[in-house]
Length: 347
Image 1 (cartoon, rainbow, N blue to C red):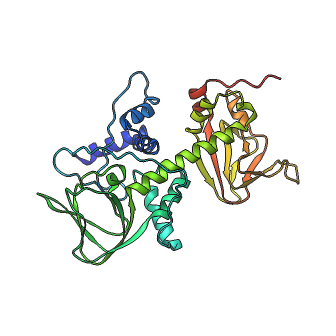
Image 2: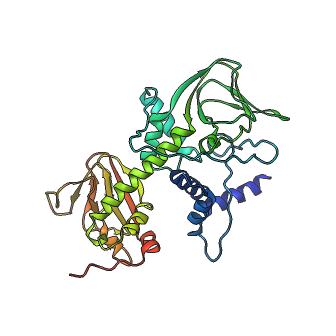
Image 3: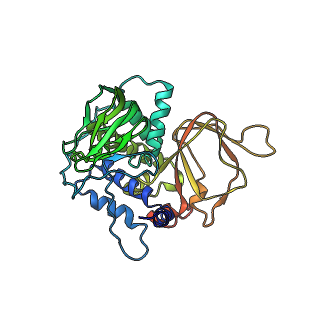
């Protein structure tokens, strides 16, 4: 494919946000541990269709390089592997492995933020995964993964150089710090598409399939319970049925605001509703020396008028994070798509 054709393809993918939405759909199937992931993915993508359903197939490769570099694919059709079914025990808690320095954390955060499978996870999802990464060391000449073997681990190189080979092609690329490989091992035990061999002593961060799925599934279960409880405390949503609140909870998205960052500004138009998951915010108005309401903390909400107004309400106050704060957000159009127009409560 020539450079001009490649640019056309990339522009098309960017225009319709295809990569991000496919990643979101795959992660939703993982969190549900669905026996029919294609149904979950197709149902997720159907909401973007205009007049007819279109099939999409997201077949991420097993060896990936950061950014938009080419990925390596083994010759022939990939063998299909039946995924194991997981059950998350009620008393299960996510593991914390290998002490990590601030530099280690920043490194792994950067890798996850650009990785196709992880970049669209919520910040709190990625935080739990970061804690679960384990450190490993390999001597020169060690095959970290071998083409054709079953795989159950995902790796990120932290130091050193590895050679990546594919049968019949020999060496196809060199892997250095920040290169990740083995994404499909987190989805199911797919045979490795290439061999990765340490050319010198290397260190890597690893994450296994069971931990990855347990974290996403267990956290999704807890998140749904927490979010549904939060929504049940919002007066204008109290008329919703439990299943409607659960559906709404499944569409909430996390955003993180650092200390002293404004979340909304007085006078701006807004169509976004906010629930505080963690942290604290203050509410201020121009011309008022004091804060205009009590501090809002986890479980509190603001911007609910955005769900009532057709064109978005004018924000009545500025809401600012007092400390690092995580909020759950929903846009008016998304709410309307799910549950229809919301009518003001009648008294």
